[in-house]
Length: 148
Image (cartoon, helix red, strand yellow):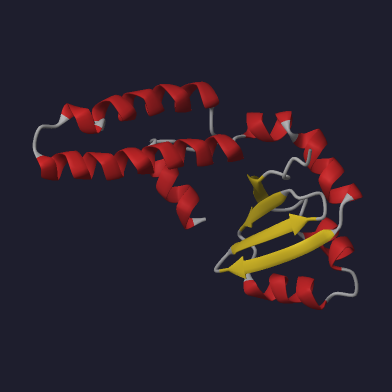
């Protein structure tokens, strides 16, 4: 949640994320903080770090935007219904779940108590579907590996 707030603040986003506005803000920030714009080595280095943060923040916010989630909803539902939980991790309020189809999703705001209930449930797949997968803000963090 901290990461979401930080990136929303960077892009001056209040409320829901609008992709068109986000893209406009992104372009402005990239122009403002492009390293080639600065002569001093110290400023150039700082601008490079800020540019990387801007790029990461943009991709992150796009991945949790309502438009992106709506466009990928069918694939997400297929993953959580047809695939089983393969691996999971929890750190702070972030839970990362890898499914047997190879997709990995991050769920934001999952506290330690709920995570422990998930781990100790009779069926982590059913518990996840009922209490986590459809209840928390999520984003796809890793795509399934393509096998040839």
